[in-house]
Structures are given as structure tokens and as C-alpha cells.
Image (cartoon, rainbow, N blue to C red; front, side, top):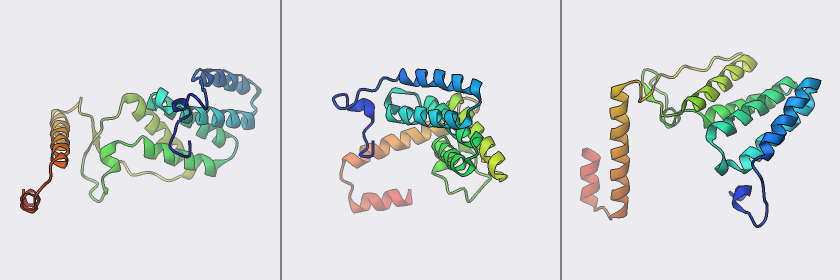
Length: 185
């Protein structure tokens, strides 16, 4: 995994069955009945590691749910610093792309949010837990969903067209004068 490979991609070396996650979840549910927070934290960490190792077989929100459970297990076990770092990573991974790439120098700018509802829910849960642990309030970023606003939908289409034109331009050599023209247009 440290070389950029997922365990599910190297079938000849490791054979990982994603159903192992379900079995670990059943084990975690049994541990919750005993209130052994340390064992729950360890089992949640193992489940999160398995989810990350077979990430190409899972949806992003499924990995996020496992990471939330992992962070919550550490939080309940009294490992607040580790839980805070996990929540920060979740916030980074589940932030909308336009907000991630923005400098946020102008807070009045509205960002187009193309995440799924499940991803937004995971982000909001992580943000809430992070703010509870640290006592800090994260700045609220203005977001708009393309489904909710016609202007946002037009913006998404314009960005897609621009990205497609950039890909086409990358395939052909661009002269110096074309670059100058593009700079001023």
C-alpha cells in the first residue's frame, strides 16, 4: 500500500475479501454491548485499514463512514489528539473540490458543491465532532448545489467545457503567440 497499490489490485499477492468489513462491523457491534471502548477503537481502526486497502471496491462515502467510526472509537477511548487528526483528514477528503482549490481569501465567494448527499453528511458529522473536541468553530463556506440553482448548473457546464478545451489544447503544441493571446483573453 505504501507503493501506491491497493491490496485488491494485487490478487496474486494478497486476496482480500471486502465482506471482511461486514464481519468486523458485526464484531464491533458485539463489542459495543460490552462497553470495551479500547477494543472497539482497535476493531474500528482495523476495519478502516481494510476499507482503505480495498478502496477501489468501495464507494467514497463507505470509506468515510468507516473513518468516522474509527475517529469516534478513538475519541471514546480518550485519544482526543488522534481523533482530531482523523477528523481533519476526513474534512480534507470530503470537502467540495471548488472549496479545496480556493484560497478562501474572499469569504463572500460561493462555491459549487458537486458532492453526493452521503459525502456531505459525512463532512458535516466530522465537522461537528471536530468542533466539539477542539472547541473551535470552523468558518462557514458558502456552497451551492448544481441541482438547486440554475446558475450553478451553468457554471459547472462552463467549467467542464473549459477543462475539455484545455485537454484538447494539451495534445497540440501551442505557439508563443497563441499563449499570449490566451493570456489576454
